[in-house]
Image (cartoon, rainbow, N blue to C red):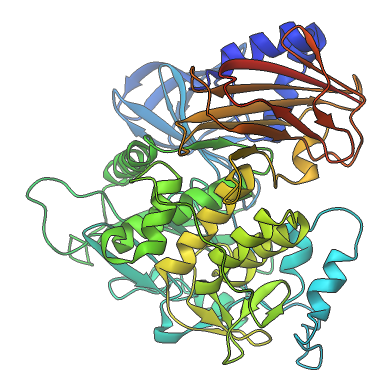
Length: 547
């Protein structure tokens, strides 16, 4: 298993001290917190704490601001909640005496149809939309792909997203309504944002099943709804509970926050400390469930978060009853039995923006995994990336990542949730970073990773990925601009894999030379960025590619 601190030490020895000196900037690009920001020094009383931030120290009461963040709540003797309300996507932090325990990022994406969407006249015959994106320089990217088609706005059954645990699910509409609670009863301005179609959808915690709805006002203020399902406890009620927070932000400051627990009568205000303690438990609980599997810290946080979120949603839906596709995703991520290698499937008869279309003319989620596997096997990486970003933007509810079975290519209507579609996203990400060639004894590392992930100062960690030869890990540290090199570390089973291992560094630039350990290495392809290690080579391998 990769140890990040040891990796940076070994990479520094390989690539020079300057590479290590820059790792903090690279981690910032990846949204990895290497040092604590805030730290609790004293719980003074039930309403007051002392915090430090670097060399600064301040005594705070609830609602007061320190270094741009508001002290939202004190859970006495355990932690405090600090939150950035200066921007609509400011972080929430759970801070204790050791520092920042959890940094929970916020996302918010619009479901409004901006500008002129693609028209049916731009047919999928020949897939002109996909061809237009692929004709642009470089790899496809999420923002470009997301802008081509309208977002999903109407899901059959009106369940646009859901929260839950393996014991049950509670659905939400696109505007944030649910069977047990409507936030508009606490903030009437929410209805104005709903009527204007301006509701933003997102998540709290990157990949956690914690929904976020933002209702903006014209004056820059906004109201926010957070909702999550507490993880079950022994002897808990069979009814799935939900915890809600409705908060009002004005002038970049928290005006008020109210908490609701679905287990209490609606007339009662929920306990704020219970809300945040439950949120911390949800973070810890889902992390524990994901812990046996492959781990990703990659240069595009959105992709890693979407993959993990997809795994969690399939767990909530019940992986055991969802069919072989979900079991395959779980196995490929190390959360279940490793499946047999996927067989080649027939290519779809038509595509729209690179996404497979079924005979009924619908973009079909059950075709994504097989099609994506075949694209990666055939080394059609740009098309595989178009498929991944298309799935994230157009097969899922925007901002909240619930995958649907099918959707209209040019409309905004979609069929209900599909665990098969959801699992396909996790599979695509896994195969882009770790891929086992079905036709040859070849293990690919980084075969489909986008060029942007290897930009200067970018770090990528892929840790403990299961393969038919055992668990493997690799990491890359790019210094391609200033030092004209990329350092990598590969960890294979000690006895080797019995297969060729190919590490690909897709930079768009030819490799001039390679060093493996302390030896000059000749087995590489300059133009494709592929470095080949022989069968039987195992253990920890340090690699440097020069440009």
